[in-house]
Image (cartoon, rainbow, N blue to C red; front, side):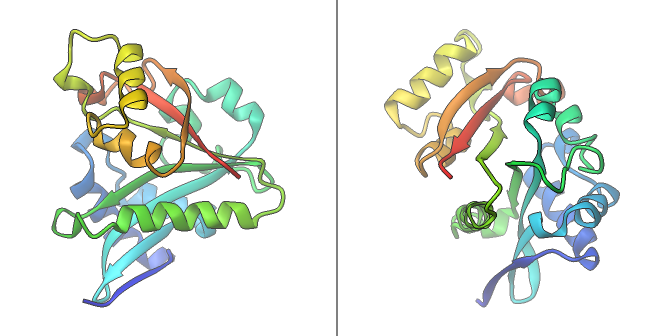
Length: 203
């Protein structure tokens, strides 16, 4: 199996959307038009992995300003301009925001998500003006513990370094640290209770 990582082009929008549809609960996946707008807005931040020339994994990112984070960091639709990056991305933004990663079910276990996120981090570090590398992640396993406050759940995940929450562990195990918890960040993310965790990777 020949696996390759490369930046996205406009021609990849449909295939990348299909990966998103397979990777996320239906209300959270980006459609083809949204994927196309992301690529048109900031092609350098949109990466994908191919296996035998088929797109099997994607990773999205944008550059944002500290002002945008402070004023619109409370909601996913605001921090991503409704999943398009058109008005949220700033060409001179000093924050590199990793927005999402997705892998087709057939290719999970190949570490493609890790490779793509690591590639995004290397790219962010190569931009001299970038001061922070951030990402909002979903506590995907939180729905299994409805009687635990999200703060306690996140603390337990952080302290135990366990696989209690595979999505959160994915980042923490790679060196990310927890910055803050955001309630109601993505209300349609039922499994995560609408919550998101803001993480930071070292520059």
